[in-house]
Figure 1 (cartoon, one colour):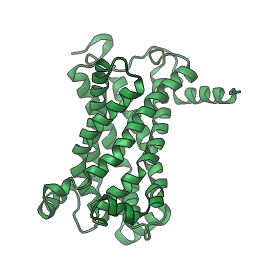
Figure 2 (spheres, one colour; figure 1 turned 60 degrees about the horizontal axis):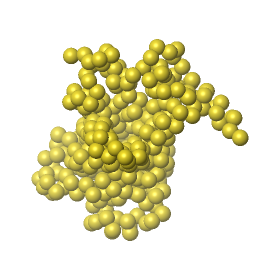
Figure 3 (cartoon, one colour; figure 1 turned 180 degrees about the vertical axis):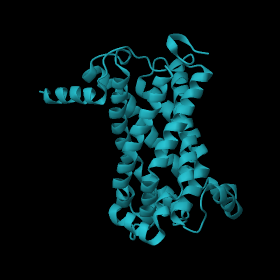
Length: 317
């Protein structure tokens, strides 16, 4: 049943959170599937940094030694694992943001964004972890399995349930800081763009303008979050491939400087566009479902937003 103002459902209703969850699943699953080759290279650079020490030569080595199909190894784990994670991340973020906003009336927005994103990510990573455990092994161990169908039973037979959650702590260590920084940076960037650049309320902007603001804020959020989460991402790959028995040994083996720099260029190349596309698809779904209010202004879109941004930067004293 269609709600008020042409919406498919009432805001903050169970159907609303359901749509947000589906939107998160579709946006995250599709974007992560699209960048599977970059993810394959990233994981191999982390596990075998001597052999795969650069992006260009890394792709060439994988192609020559394992064939073009190797670049798509683990695609099912990307699609379904990150689809489930995205559904939990976005759907539960909307739920917790409403919950904490009502319960913590006197708290500032940053606190609400922090608590909401952290709470959502805890559950999202529990959903992702089994898929990630199989995916990393499939991508770095050519004879381990072809995908999820044979990878899940093989991992269970050799390591039991614990094998699926071997990396949950470093996964939280990677994704919790990333998600908290990403959502907080995104929300504040959106507010800043509307207030100082667009100089109008979101509700008074066209659909294309809203999505243009989303893209700018999302790219900034993804870049900042990537730098913060890079050490934990290296640890996750090391643990899953048994290059270390625990987190402390992984840190020692990798080295403090390499924790922050190893695979960082490829992660920025990978994560920035992915987060931008995720927010774009997610907000597009919300707009199409009538969950984001819009009015009938002329379509300016991303070029219009960039034009306003350039004007303001050129007029800074």
